[in-house]
Amino acid sequence: MTEGTSRRLLLKTAAAIPLAFTFGLLVSPALRYLRPTIKPLDLFGPSDQPKPLEDVYFSEKDFPDEWTCLPFMFQQTYKEYNPEGTEVRKIPGFAVKLPTGDVVAYSRICPHLGCIFNFVKDPQECAKGYNFTPAGPVFACPCHLSVYDIAQDGKVVSGPAPRPPRKFEVKKEGDRISIISLEAGGIA
Image (tube, rainbow, N blue to C red; front, side):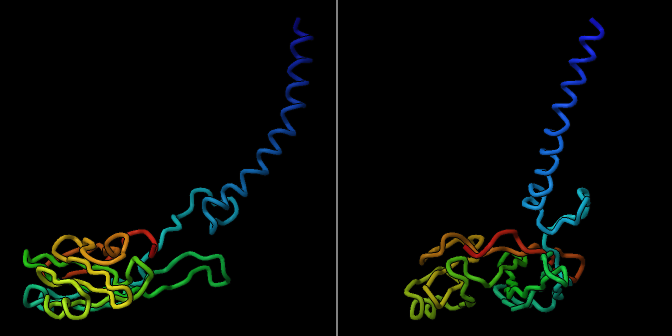
């Protein structure tokens, strides 16, 4: 019985080695698919998520009144499979002080087709140029006339845009207001 068991174990092991080798060969492409910038054998390396190149910051004094809107340029690094290993993308944004006193920040890239939208403070100006009369200040895209209500968290109130623009994470420390990261996602 011991001889038969050891022979069976030997045959099972001999059959399993090629299968294990084959599955081992499939692991590398699967990992490359899941994390394309992973280095060989670096399974527990740092995340491939985009990172800010540097923080964008404002002072509380930069926002003297409600609905003060300041443009900024946010630079974000992406890991890429190129000789440099990264790519830096510049993302235009708006920081706006709400009537509540909070400062919010949005990407200026329209989620419809990627145009750069504007801040429109006067509802009558919006009615003339974008065929929509809002209750207050809005973001409005000149390409296809999408309008986003800032007071309602960027909600689409007019036009073909499928969703609100991407938000930036805003952190307040004392008098300093920092724009530290961008909500994940793409244009469409």
